[in-house]
Length: 88
Image (cartoon, rainbow, N blue to C red; front, side, top):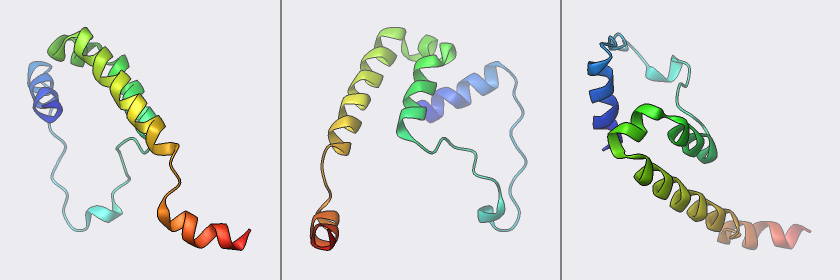
């Protein structure tokens, strides 16, 4: 839904698409946000997406995603338990 909303907003604002990538995309600078909290904050700050999805939806969705990510970070992965706990 977010991809379609961004495409819709791009058409409404008459934003030209970037040129196609020729060759390896691995050589192109990374343009997406790298941390989940950055993405949540960017969604929350986007007035345009708030208008498309509604401010209530954006508020609820970002609250759920923050909670999910906090719970994810609170767990120690199995690999860390097995590999790192023995080296301390």
